[in-house]
Length: 484
Image (cartoon, rainbow, N blue to C red):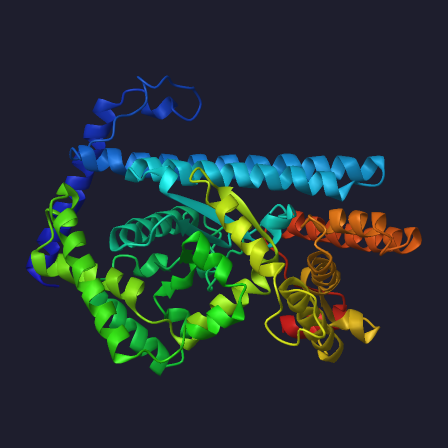
């Protein structure tokens, strides 16, 4: 063997032995640590280099992660235990139970938003956060994702800059809970699809614009869409007026209209002026001292593109979906800016106004949306073979949320929207439709029983799997086959 290698190896052994003797001398009670509890002062001291502020940053970060996880786990455990106890005592009032869980989920999320807003120094009166989906219905369970968007008083490059930074901080913080699909989870996280403000995936959050473009192009070329570094959608940052206009297809169709030469020139001038106004402010900010002028130019230009660039067909379609299917259920989550009332006033004017098409068949835009969705959902559920419930028989697997809960929930949401019952919670909708005489007592009772059963099955599944619902096996043979 090479003499140098033998010498080096011998030196390592001697050094290790010396370190062991040194530790033993420094820690006379080390042998008794396992058997005897020690005070903090008596615990062994770890010899390491002084990290200073860097160590404080790491300690604070891990302290925050630990604290967030502990709070969320306590909410889930308390409600899971409560659900089990209520189940033993008799029928569970799922309306009351889920509204309680939902209120705690909102409180947890709102507190995190508030902490990040204060850490960034953003004026909380200049924007609001709205939520959609189950949280807007008051039906978010033990495990839920966050479908949210930012509503601002005025859209400027500086606003875009602040809101995208906030979206990134929120995404990173919720990602650290360990419940994003990228790390095998399916729990509390910012929606990874389009129903959230624009942000970077956790793995790509430090990429510069050039890297983002390169990874994006490679992901599309290889059809590896999970490698796309972006999440969310630009259309999820809006003013109250823009958001309410999403309910009007005449507006959403105009998003893709061809611009005239005059419009392009005016937009270019507006963008140039906004760019230099933003540059002067951000250049004077000490937070950007480490960035060169070229780096800051590129960053601001990226925000300017988000603000002044025409929507892509995909983004325009997303705006249309928001104004029809997605925002039938919408509620304020963090609304110190009071934007929700502004949005709601304008929204109701549009929804109560004339329909976009077929005025002889529809009384209002609201009824037009509801009727179209009722027909679309009905066709989808009846013709989709994977929906066991509609087939009238059980298959090898069943998706408790998608089939047992989602089908009646969508029908009830559409009916509540059509009749403008003033409620979004499905059990509340049943009650109001019953009071209006649209559902008779017997039918209202049966539908309520169905929804309560579906909700209970969701909670039971989440309690066991510690995730949002997936399809579950109801065939041992199919399970054994797939396991092989």
